[in-house]
Length: 82
Image (cartoon, rainbow, N blue to C red; front, side, top):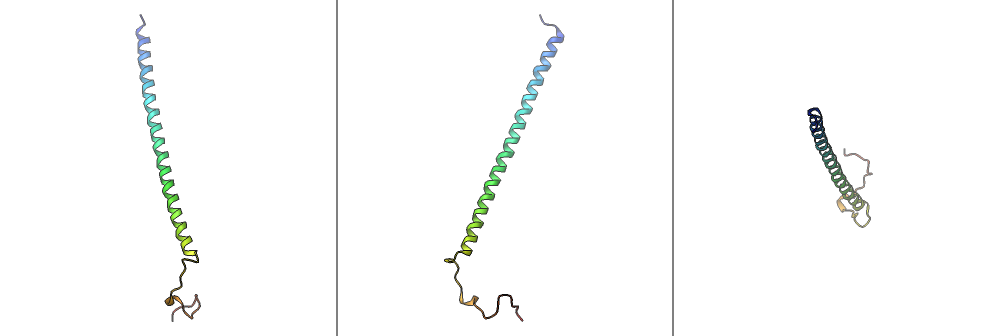
């Protein structure tokens, strides 16, 4: 039969291992969620960048640029209204 001190040591050791396991699982879960949140945010930012790129390409494309008659003036571009 094992001594009382040895039994107490085994019980505390098992309890410490279980607490450590729970701590590691919690930390792993936290890191995983932080990683996934960063990936989702990165995808959203890439999507926004693509939308802005498409918008800019549309502005610079010669097929899209159409000069309206009201936009044409005799003044140079930098002239102010007086």
